[in-house]
Amino acid sequence: MSIMEEFLQYLISGITVGMIYVLVALGYNIIYNVTEVINFAQGEFVMLGGLCAVFYYESLHLPLWVAFFMSIGTVGVIGLIFEKFAIRYARSQSVLTLIIVTIAFSIILKGSAMFIWGKDPYSLPAFSAGSPWMVAGAAVQRQSLWIMGISLVIISGLSIFFHNSFYGKAMCACADNPIAAKMMGIPVRRMILLSFTLSAALGAAGGVIITPLSLMEYDRGALLGLKGFSVAVLGGLGNFWGALMAGIFIGIGESFCAGYISSGYKDAVALVALLIVLFVRPEGLLGKTK
Image (spheres, rainbow, N blue to C red):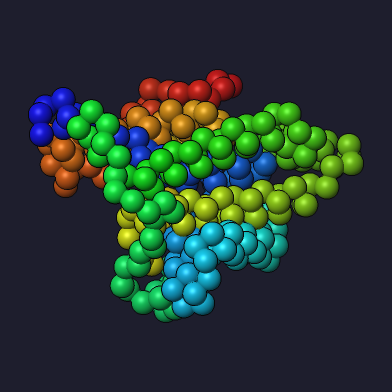
């Protein structure tokens, strides 16, 4: 493999990895846009999405596309239960209390997943069968195209929903001023419930589409959640297109770090980027200054 082919291979791999982080970051952004709360259980929703799809596909022998939507629905209900029976009663507490609640819930989900699925990693078949496509000497996995395509569709849909639809604007109003939103007739509790359900379902979709490329196991959620949080902050909390830019940036950085330096350092890329942006530009790449 020539130097140029090697460079292109790392670039494609980095974009694919970055899109995975983008899907996790979108879940953070949805909840932040409505409640201005950071949900540190988001990575566990991704993990559960992949493992639930494995259950529906391998144990119940459902078609892959049915397992995909069943997994989204299942994890969406878990997100709904989390908000209805935990977050709702802690909303009047401090931000630190809410953070502890989300961390505690992530630990519960992780332990439950280990009890149900064990410690073995699981995989799913690719959405499209066939050998990788070759682009200028670099191999492009078919599942990578699914990840990129679904990510772009979700980002576009969320951006249109929050900026152009009545319900999207109502959800954003709940974060800006929940009292004023309630006085205007907006059902604040229902909007918050919808945000957690949508965020969990989105995380599950991300978990399903990445499982064919990277094995899914009970403890994958914590690292994915940390990477997704770094991407959300780097792009600007609440900004979907900023998350896309930041995710691709971190993904490519990790890929080049693993390829040209050492794979042992690649997980530090997101953390270093997070520290730099917190010192230099805390509002993120496309975040609004206050």
